[in-house]
Amino acid sequence: MTKRPNIVVIMADQLAPQFTSTYGHPIVQTPNLDALAARGMRFDAAYCNSPLCAPARFAFMAGQLVTKIGAYDNAAEFPASIPTFAHYLRQLGYRTCLTGKMHFVGPDQLHGFEERLTTDIYPSDHAWTPNWDDPHERIDKWYHNMDSVKEAGSAATTFQLEYDEEVALTAKRRIFDYAKYRDLPFALTVSFIHPHDPYVARPEFWDRYEGVEIDLPTSPLAEDPHSLRLRSAIEATDVSVTDEQIANARRAYYANTTYVDSKIGEIVRTLEEAELLDDTIVVFTGDHGDMLGERGLWYKMSTLDHSMRVPLVMAGPGIVHGVSPEPCSLVDLLPTMLDWAAPGDWPALGMDLDGRSLVAAAAGADPDPGATALGEYCAEGSAHPIFMIRRGRWKYVQCDIDPPMLFDMDADPDELQNLAADPSYAEVEAAFAAEVRERWDSAQIRADVLASQRMRRAVHAGMSAGRRVDWDYQPRRDASEEYVRNHMDWTVAAATTRFPPIAGATGRS
Image 1 (cartoon, helix red, strand yellow):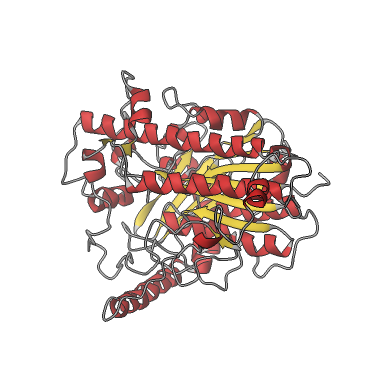
Image 2 (cartoon, one colour):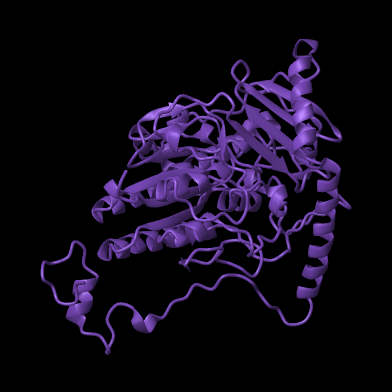
């Protein structure tokens, strides 16, 4: 690959790969993701590094595990001093742009991106800070409950639909802008909020599943202590839902997954129309999954695979068609992008990376038997850190206050049989337990989380008093420079905004 490729990362929110046709679901319709996978690499053991929005996204941006950068929960600040892939790609001469959700918390709302085309959809302050000093406390203003399941259905518009329509529009505009002026490669991140709950779909997508028998969860309730805590936290132990309500929620989620898939199609089609597709690597992924009623759980926050696995599909120059079983995670995308942008000639790194490049795997190399995906959870629904290791066929989960869990993912992909207490697997369990102790100081991490939460609660209390000051991103827009204005020659405006251009048109550079 001699020409530096453009990079477009499309991210969905709360999309479990198990609920896509690309990954084998018999009902859910994702034809555009199917088409992307048909000309690229599908990763079948890709994980988030924390099953919650902001921590997963900060790990993705920084190539760092969440405990290393203090990205514990949805109200943890993402420090401006943490280098991201956007910082590094800018050093390599890339134009960098974000449109859509990234759940940045703190006054820095760019984190290396030269421009951001939309605001975020969630607050950027510390309001959503959990309280491990009182882990049973509920902040009902923002905490998940079962309302999303009970109220699922169809609607003409929602705040999430309005947001994602804006995200898609601004992304397509910027792609055409890049097509007009091809002097530099670009890295564009397009991040949608769907299919994240509330489970409410536009009628045209809801209607695609009319008359379809929606599959219901069939596996038994998860009975490990963390799952029990999560069911209590989302009020699933106190609020019952009917099979009809569960089916409605899943139908709306499937519909919203198809909606996101339609946006993948729009972005890819725009790249093709802009004559950029052949020079662009397209990556589709998500920040985490959704339990969607499986094992009696909803939303995320669980270490089970419906919550922790993410879709990961890559297509473009240098990527072959195939399926990779190699465990990987979101922290691997930063070094992968650097290898695409400057193989063997990276800029100086500000921090050692926790990820590894997936370029070889995307090019069809044999799976690395030592490939490892690591996960951490330090947010609501627990008062102690939880650690996950996925390597080869094994998945291991450890928390100081819970019995460990060991699953053979080849033989038991639904994670129904915990082998940690089985004497036949004592050696495997002991090796993973020792690795957890070597990798993580659980007591120190818990102390750090508690200290961070206490500081943030104090800051939020102060910012909530007196005159309100917000960190929320305000997109820059000067309407006096848009479309046609008196200081412009309209023929020049028409020529410079038209693609493909008219040969020799005035104003075309």
